[in-house]
Amino acid sequence: MTLDSFKRTIGEPAPSDRLAPALQALWWAAKGDWNRAHVFVRDDPSREAAWVHAYLHRVEGDLGNAGYWYRKAGRPAASGSHEAEWDAIAAALLPPEKSKTTRRDGE
Image (cartoon, rainbow, N blue to C red; front, side, top):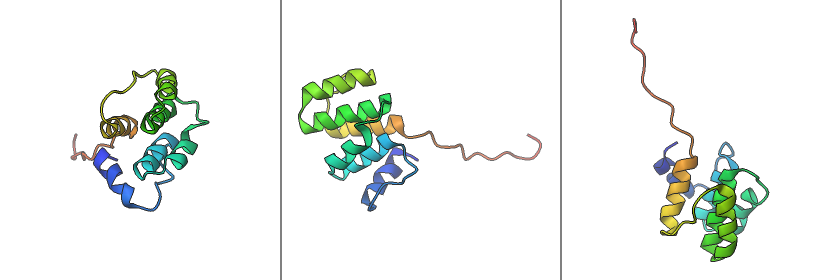
C-alpha cells in the first residue's frame, strides 16, 4: 500500500483490520478521533506505537508527554506541521509494496 492509497482509505468507515495497530491509530487520528487512535497505541510496547503515541500527544498539545514517547520511540521530537509528521510516520510504517515485475520465460 502506498501513502496515497492509505490516505484514500480515510473516507471509509473503518480502517482495514490487516493494518498494524500503529497504522490503525494514525488512520483514526486522520479521521479526527484522537481517543480511538490512542486506544490502539497506549498499551503497545513497540517503537512504532510509541512514535504514533508521541504524535498523538503532540497534536493534543501535551509536548512533555509527547517528548517522553518520542524518546521511547528512539525518534527526535518533531517540529514541522502535524500533517507532515503524519505523512512521515505513515510512509515509514506502511509495508513496502510487492514488486509487480513479471519473469519472462528463460530468465
